[in-house]
Length: 130
Image (tube, rainbow, N blue to C red):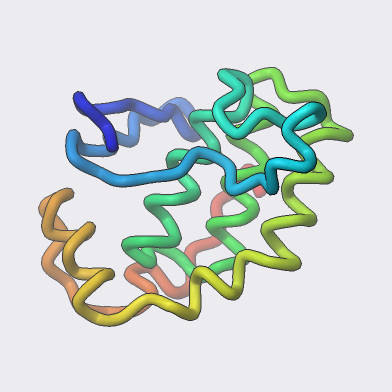
C-alpha cells in the first residue's frame, strides 16, 4: 500500500497515484526472484502504474501493458528484461484483469477522483509513444 502519493512520469507528464493504493509491484513467481525482483527500482514505477491501470481499468489491457513496457524502458530496465516482463503480463495479466468488478474498479477510481463508470475509462487511447 502506498504510504504517500507517488508520481510516475509518462511522456513528460506527471501521473499521480494516490496514497492508499494497494499494489504488489511486479507479480513475479518466487522461483524467478533470482532474475527478477518484484520491487526492483528500475521497473517498480512501471509495475505500480500498471497495477493502477489494471485495477481502475484506466485503459484497455493492451494499452496498460504497453505503458508498463515503456515506463520500464524509461526507468532504465534493459530492453530484453522489459520484453520478458511485457510478454509475461500479455500472457498472464488477463486473469487479473478479468477478476475486476464494477465495485472494485470504482473503489480505485474514487481514490483518484475519477467518477466515470465507463470501462475501460479511455477505451480508444493510443499514445504517440507506443
